[in-house]
Image 1 (cartoon, helix red, strand yellow):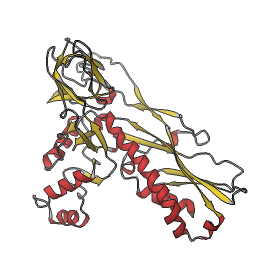
Image 2 (tube, helix red, strand yellow):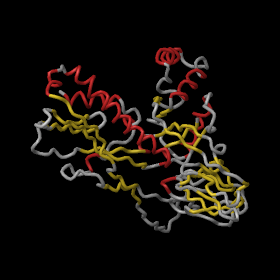
Image 3 (cartoon, one colour):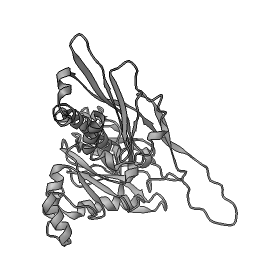
Image 4 (cartoon, helix red, strand yellow):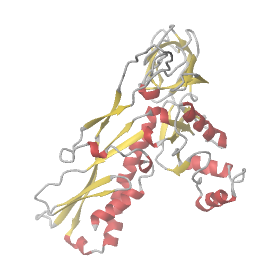
Length: 397
C-alpha cells in the first residue's frame, strides 16, 4: 500500500516528464541497472536528393545519442514503530507525500533543464509573450525543421501561462475553449497547434554580458568552433552556456529539401565564451542533431558559412535573467527509468511500475534495533537525454 501511494503522488508531480519519449526503458538490463549504464540511441540515416539513370551511391552515415542513467533520485527517512499504527492516509500525508512532491519536482527540473541543448528560440528575453504570434512562430520554427504537426506540446511557466490566457481570453476563440481557460486559469489543449501545460519548474537562462560590436573574423567557417572578433577587449566572459546567437549570411535550411527558410539559423552555445586582449572570442556552438555548421551533404543545416566580417547577434539583452518555456514534439527528449535491484536482508522491499509513464520506484524498509525505528528509502533511477534538439523551440519570457 505504501508503494502504490508513493507512485501515485510521484506521477501527479511530473508534468513535463509525462509528455516526452519514454520508449527506451527496456533497453537497459534490469539486473544490472546502475548509475552510469549507457544505451546509444541510433538515429536514422539521412540522404540527399539524387536523380538520373546512372546509379548514384550515397554514404550511409549512422549517428547515435548516448542515454545514460545519471541519477539515483532518493528520499530517505526514519519512522518509529508507532508510526506504523497510522492509517495509510495519515502516513501518506505526513511522510510519503512531502518526499514524493520533492522527488517528482527534482525529476521535472532535470527534464526542463534540457532546454540548454535547444538552439531555436522565439520571443524576447525579459518580455513575457502576450500574443498568439510568439507561439505561432514557435510552430513555424518546428515546421521549418520538418517536425510533424501531430502531438506538439507547449510547457510554459506560471507567468507565461497567466499572460497568454489573459491576452487570448476573447480573441476569436471558440466559446468552449474560453470557458475552459476561464474555469481552469490555463490554456486549453489543442490551441494554436499545441497541447498546453503549465509547469512551475521551467528553468532560467541568464544572457551573457556581451559588449563591443562582434563580427565573424574569418571566411568559410564551418563546424562547432566559430572565431569572432570585435568584443570588448580583455573583458573575460562575454556569452554564457545556453545563449543563442545568429551569424550574418548563415540561414537555416529545411532538413529534407535543404532549401533556405529565409531566417538566420540560430545556434546555442555549448560553453561559456570569453574575449581576449584583442577582443577575439571563439564560440562553441550546436544546432540540429547537436552538430555545428554544416553547409552540404545529408546533414546540411545551414545555407552557407557565416559572412566574413558579418554581424554576430545575440538573442536577448545583456544579463537578462528569465525562464524558458518549451514547444516540442515528444521525440525531442527522453527520460529513461529502470528498476533497481531488490537487496536481501531487509524488513520490507518492493518495486513497482506505473505503465502510463514507465516509472519504477523501489521502496526499502529496514529495522534498527538500537533505536526501535525503521529507516525507509524511496529510489528512482533515471537519466535524461536530448535526442533531437531540432524538434523543440525555446520560448523566452
